[in-house]
Amino acid sequence: MKLLIVDDHTLFRNGLAHLLQSLSPPPEVIESESLNTALQLLDAHRDLNLVLLDLKLSDAVGVDSLLTLRKHSPDIPIIVLSGEEDPSVIRLCIDRGAMGFITKSATHDELLKAIRLILSGGIYLPRGVMQNAVHGQSPEARSDVALLASLSDRQREVLAYLLQGKPNKTISSNMDISENTVKAHLSAIFRTLGARNRTEAVYFAARAGVPME
Image 1 (cartoon, rainbow, N blue to C red):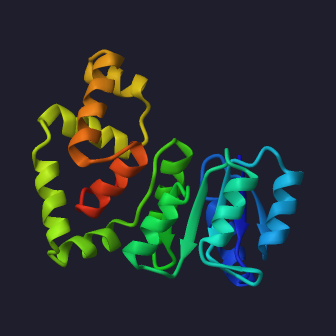
Image 2: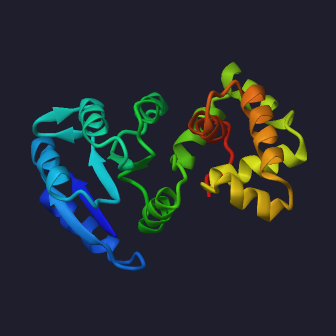
Image 3: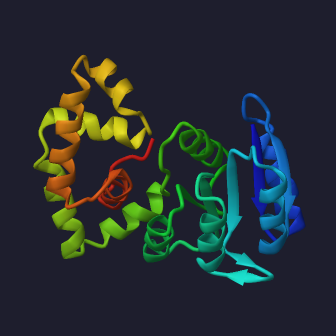
């Protein structure tokens, strides 16, 4: 497994690289302090499994760096690492193709859990930040919770597996139902939540306070 850290703070990169050795198996970690260098490393290392990207770099600020990396290497998952905790920024990153968003205030366990989830095909959102948005009791948040409550027990079970990044085949096996039935449940979930795909359904669930683990 090979991971790329893109962050312009040397101490943070070094600390994160050391922490990532807790993964099993320990990954090969490559570091970049800028977007331009990251693009060069992506060309040089075609076998990268994951990119950990800070939104504030010396040569790029905000989601521009995310968009550039996604365009350059669309098949490599990207996790955004940021001190930003605004739910609208998180949503923007997910909408622009990030597979996860980790705040720099996250614990080591939370960070490692997020990386494992994304490597298994899931999407990670910071539960605490998303729940804070819900606890503001906006009409939108109350509507989200009501829509989730309207799902059937089986649909909620399928949604729970969806949040874990499980593919349809695994969901089918675990629930002892056919893959066609899983697809039918997913279609019903998307229709109820107004989601176009798995990513939007996961964001919806996180915003409504469903545990992302």
